[in-house]
Length: 303
Image 1: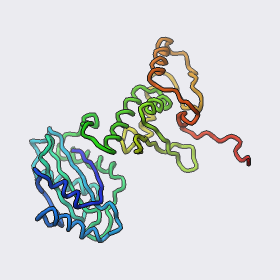
Image 2: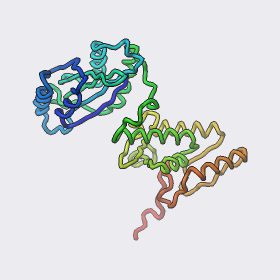
Image 3: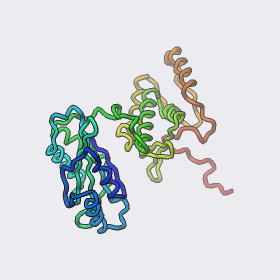
Image 4: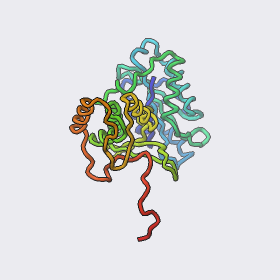
């Protein structure tokens, strides 16, 4: 079982999309289910308890592996969905669960009101991490097959932010496999339209996080995939460096290889491949970022 989390502003639009042909309501709480109109009306009545909350529409898609088809029925889906919501801290609010039959894999849509029955806002902080943990625990509890990961996602069906996120994911995974340090990784992904930005701890040179941008969209590394946090990437690059018996560090405006004791043939082969696949930076501005900020020269002098 895996989950996809969406937030929106229109209950009418979300309900209309979910209750399409070949769908069935398998659970409802605090809602009249006579029609899409009455469902949307009930959601909006409660929403008015917190009128200034823009994105009050909570929408979660729970999907199961095709290998789980024989063990799934409406009761199992509702039971696992309720446990999932509890682990996410989504409780005491209106909820609609709808099962779709238009795909090979079984999945349900959960619409919930982010304004709870007491007029309080249901938090959406750390949702991706909590969702990953909840799915992992429920897969173990029910015996569902754990997803094999992002490599099996059909890229052709993705749109908008999801499409960009997976493009960044694929680019980074390929770059990490062939790069021996942060400089090479940044050059590789930049050539393919992805930029990286380091986040530093306040008033410190310590790197706290990393984000990536493409097509005007920016994502934290850990939001793309847990393996793409700054720490995980750094460990992966260091692991490659150590395995090759070399030490590479990010240095400003320095590209000289200080260790030429490796096999000459391997070195020449690597440099040749790098020249064909990695573009040269044209200015100091385009140089890869340092793990530590470079101190400004002539600091404190007035002009």
